[in-house]
Image (cartoon, rainbow, N blue to C red; front, top):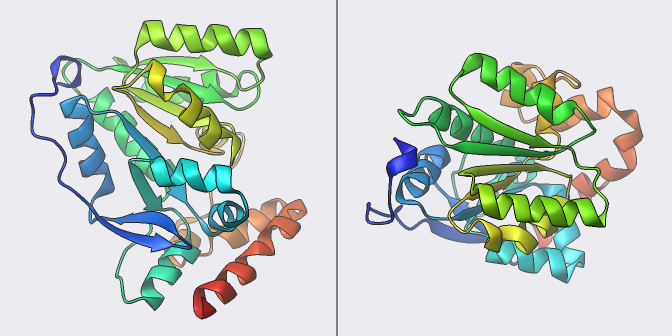
Length: 250
């Protein structure tokens, strides 16, 4: 019953922390359960879903590296990060951000007194379309949506709105690194909320884009499917062999 839980409840247990290119990565058997315990205790949490592309960008961008280092939970979203850990004899399964976010929505949606959720990002109408999919599944859910195309005045108004509403879960789909910067800048408005940068998850939930088939995901080939569907991403995908080379030789 998330809405009535307080900080007096048992906090989430500490996590083992390793590093990927001087960035923290937290090892856990069940990330969703760990975050749910934080939700139940009213502990604010910033979650970063780390993949190879973000790791390489942070390696060259001190501002992004600092945001990741200050996050409460950094999960291995990409196959490259899991590969990096395996090279160093750490057995850790991949935790896709879209699946972790979905697990948190489900936890709130099935609570006796569901809390409030914010979907922020994507093109106009997409966040609302994604929210309706979840409302149909869990009618008691209260999801407030806002597209990611705001001018400075609208952005300031939205920040004030968050401070007034105090949602439990804020999912931000602005893309990397913009969503990470935005969360770091605005966390103080909702200190007890869980914040997650979800990239293109809103587009997938809304049905605008399709996720890779399960067999590709299970074989760590989701990146290949994205390249197939969006060939213009090929330049961005060049970071993958660079990451693998750095993982082997650093």
